[in-house]
Amino acid sequence: MPTDTADSRPTHVRYAIVLVAMLAAVLLYLERVCLGVAEVFIREDLNISKAGMGWVMMAFFLAYALGQVPAGWLSQRYGPRLMMTLYMLGLALFGACIAFSQDIVTLFISRLLLGLSQAGAYPTAALLVKRWIPDKDRGFASSVVAFGGRFGGATANWITGLLIVAFVPMGTPTAVTAEQVLDATPILSPNADQKKEQDKTPALDKVRAEVRTAVANLPTVADALKTFTAAHARFEPLDVANIPLPQDGRRIATIPPAERTAEESARLNRLVLEKAFPGAIRQLHTDGWRPTMYVYAGLGLVVALLFWVLARNRPTEHTWCNDAEKLLIVRGQAAGSQTAGTDAIPWKELIRSRNQWLFSAFQLFTNIGWVFLITYAARYLDERFGTPLDERGLMTTIPLFAAALGMLFGGWLTDRLARRIGVRWGRAIPAGLFKIPCVIAMAACPFLPSAWAVVVALTVMSFFTDVGVPPAWAFAQDTGGRQSATVLGWANMWGNLGAAAGAKLLDTVATEWGLEVMMYCCAASFALAGLTGLLADAAEPLFKENREVK
Image (cartoon, rainbow, N blue to C red; front, side):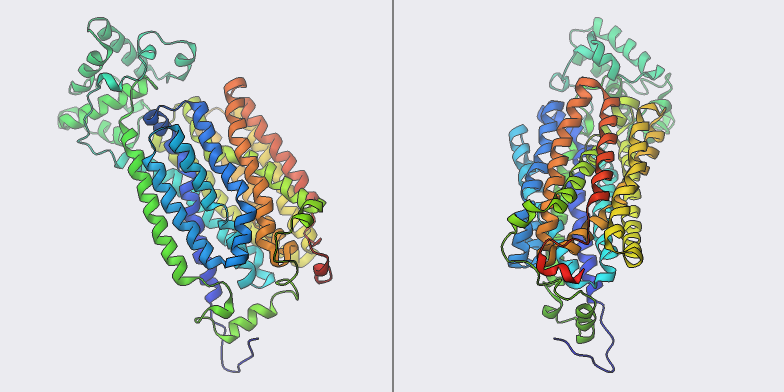
């Protein structure tokens, strides 16, 4: 037991522990979310249908969910320092495997293994927070770690779009070959669904008419398209500036035609053709998704090393942590909060606890609604509004940055409420009541007239969803005793089963009944999350021997 020293001020190692856990969370979400932007190129490169990609998206969440409880227990058994380092190394290895994938089977397996490698990360971080942070600051410390996850997710959408474009240099050949014509039907005689997917910009209608005329006079579709990519300033009579092109295309369009190089003109022509006939021609930027995945895998190695160097399992094990800080941490934690419970996974207590089932249902319904943001938001913006790649990345980034702010606000709010009215309502109000704006925002999306209006609604949803995350972490720490990581893992398991089922459910609903019904499903799920969040009681500990400290 550390003792008081008259002239020693507490060190601040506990803050470094929270920050390195936050950094790990940044990369975990960066790797997890990036497929939302990259999936259109992966589907094209590996010849995977939208339905098949839905199964790939689900693979991560399914493995992530099923690995939660055992991975949380492993962190308690072998220590969070070792296990978090291994989880980050797994992220690097299986992230590289995604880049190596050659078909849907290898991609599915890689995502499955990535989900398993990440499963214990948040329960491990929650265990570190419980061991290193006094009770009164637990909600905010948890929000800082969770903030890292949302910041990583926001950065993933934005940077992934930029990297994919950047990894396709200007010298990349732009001529359309026969192998790059994926489906000639949208060019020759599009069906009703293909016509619906084509951007209605007048300039693109003119491009389609010109291409179809050329196709009629040349032996193959590829021959016709080659004539368009090779011609200097081929589309200049058109209003190119108003065509929703990716960043490199917009940049070239600002250069006067006489000042463009032949490579710039060819690239612009190719990008215009791809926009005119979505799904018909292999996209030029498809070559950029694999090197982007390699970058993220390399960052995983860096973070794994940093975590091993900086983190320790407990304050008593850290040589940088002085006695004053150790005493501050011990005195700031409720008696018995670190020892109540058992070393084994408490299956019986978890299964018999109505309170933990309510907590788990809260996580499940929240994730069904929220998973839209990191899986199908980019697709929604593309299919409904024709938003170009890098703009989709930016637009889906904004809600995740708002979510990061919601994390910090939720951590501050739950600590403040818990001090004033107790943990029962201090956790339940921000977790449950704040789901009402989420319901309204998602139900409003089908009626909004523009992509940016939808982004505003998703931003509201994302902010208020994540106000409830720090109270959820604190709930696990309040009720779990020494099994806090396992309790959070148990609830996260159900939450990510919801995400896994939600990813497939939303894809099926959108395919069978349309994008509007998909948004109503998200709204209904948030309503159920709000109800169960209000009913869960953070003042009811999982283990009876810990009941007197609440």
